[in-house]
Image 1 (cartoon, rainbow, N blue to C red):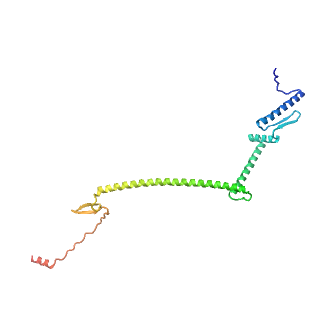
Image 2 (tube, rainbow, N blue to C red):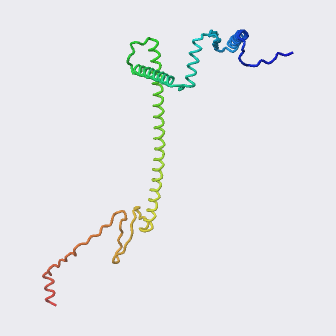
Image 3 (spheres, rainbow, N blue to C red):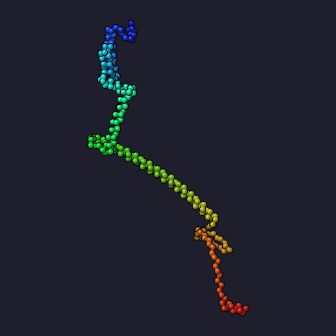
Length: 239
């Protein structure tokens, strides 16, 4: 026959209550110990009897368990009350001040200051850090220079292509001008110089087409008439 179900309520009989407390306490502490061993857990159990007697178990230290509990509780609920909030911000401020001091000290050491308190090993570590930083700066500088060179080469290629296109257009324009000159001024003479024959008052005039034509107005020249000689005068007289 199975064991009957026990109603969970306060036991009125003090003797029975004390016996049950002793049995259940021993069983609870045994289970806590087994849990700590089997699961590698940090376990802490605190029990106060109805008479105020303390019973506890911890597989490490009860103080460390309680401190860890308080810290974890504050991390999950940092603003549970005003006191916890003040402590939280005080810890944050202290941590930030310490980080700032460490960064300032590291910066001064990077600049070569306040090195007297460092050991040989610390100086060696600082030197290695500086070499790594310098190597990274040089790599970045070389990369920027290579990018600029590639950019300039690309621009040079574009300018060269533009120059070739302009040269091609200039050649086309030159060929068109040559064709127009052939149509307007005729063919080449035996010297290879382009000339054009112009008839003016029945006279053939050849003009060099490469020499600019200059037209000027001039005064009509006065004609000199010589006095008739004596023989001519006598001839007129005989007539």
